[in-house]
Length: 350
Image (cartoon, rainbow, N blue to C red; front, side):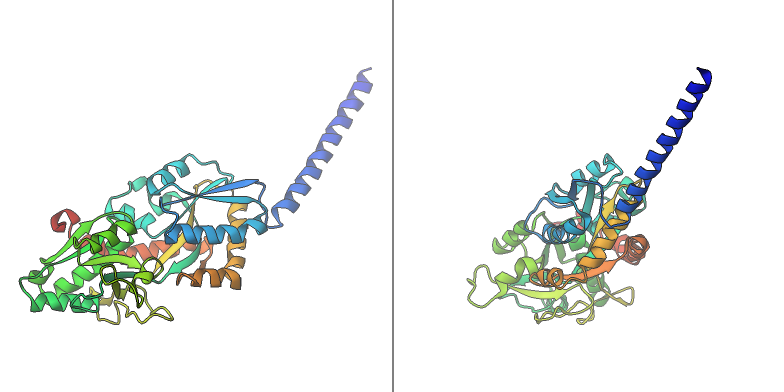
């Protein structure tokens, strides 16, 4: 009887091991085919708008990686605070990830987000696109046509003031700060003292502030504001672009960059390209990261994805998950001089 039990036990162990090896082999095959073992992935975006560039790009990249990942992806516009909070509690399987742009780290630098949300505390996924249309605009009848001319106009009109509508702690603030520091260095404190900010939220709020006459210049973008610059638009809502913060002009648009206008900070041309990327839980499954990275790399080479982005003047741009963190940390470092030397918004707010 003892011998029989021993034989049965030994056989059971062999059978278990064989099943385990077979399961392991199946898992290995699944994990090497670029798919993920998830029926659904929720992409939390750092915006509450479903009409802005964050949602548009998140939706485009999600639709392009769904099929190769063999999963369903839903983009959820929950806003930055909630997105970070939910990501903190997310599982490591990739079922919840975040998608945002440079405000993810600029917000920490400006104090809008806590230090616990620093880039180093997450796993940074691939960069997927750039919005080179990050811009500033004024009413069509403004007495200046570029950001540089607006500062010169202040110098020539010592009784005048310019108010700029921005959102605190993000992309619009870094652009404003670059302009402010250059104006101060180029024209002196008297001119800088007459540049004020109007702190607001959504693009609609900025647009309305301009139309209501509460501000002179607003932060915007080609994708969001170009419709208001076209011929035939009513005079009361017509706008014009004053400059782009990107390194190069956007094809098809006659809008000069800050660098072209001679806007420099600390002796260097002011250039800021707004880039979009995934932010993942720190302990996320590396297989999910690899699968997502492969899917994004393929998507950015896809002409349909590229063309869909171009409809709103966005550009496909890929930085791999292996390189993205170092890339963004270096970018953050180049902007810290501006952030540390710019005035507090409380001191210059209207």
